[in-house]
Length: 68
Image (cartoon, rainbow, N blue to C red; front, side, top):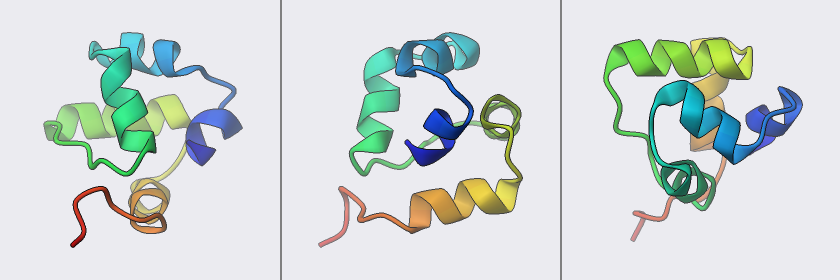
């Protein structure tokens, strides 16, 4: 969510840019992990205007919905 807001985007805009459902973006922001092909991960970096390292850090810096 931090990267998305920093880029000034809505969940809908991110979803449209990645050709995925808005609910998927919402799930990521609630702790889910993106399961996307490398080309879409690259596109996420472009959309969020961040490096791959920043993207990884953003997802690892918050609690995962899948942690036990």
